Length: 236
Image 1 (spheres, rainbow, N blue to C red):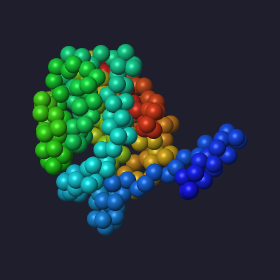
Image 2 (image 1 turned 45 degrees about the vertical axis):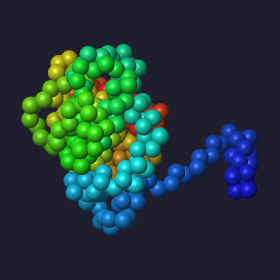
Image 3 (image 1 turned 120 degrees about the vertical axis):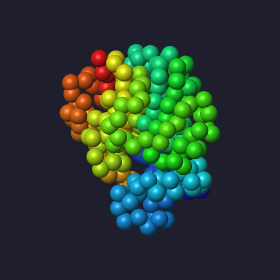
């Protein structure tokens, strides 16, 4: 009965060209945030807390929803949609979590190599099981060393968790061979309500941020179907 009434409401507002959206349930991350009685987003983003999150099978399963996996597919295919050939390239995912974006990369391309980097040892252990053909390394995004180099670099839904996102972004670019491509995404700050995030960029402020940090590189920004800001940074 409730579902039927809800359908009538949607149809009624549709007559006036008003679209009605159902609010999604609280995310797995929100539940973890409350359960751990965290006092601030800084606490949520500590290495210990992130390890606990990925060790929580219920939270992990809820986070890796069909919508999340479809988002990874969209991100993986973004370079191809912009005329960027990722076949035969060394590809990295910084902030790789459990490796699911690299699974999408593997579906879309024939990379020469795949590498995942993350500061969570727990996530890295899971990722090695999920994508055994890839190399996974524990990595601090604030580390400015240039030990590893890649042709294509992804960094998806990571910078919003950081106190110093500008420093992190500057450290990503030296990881690229020239010419090289960085594909960065963050949630749209106008819609993002997760209290574990530190930074909230609108599409406009995101473009300003990326262009300022990455100058004089060529930068393209926009919005993805699944509601995140993206930036494609080309080093020539």
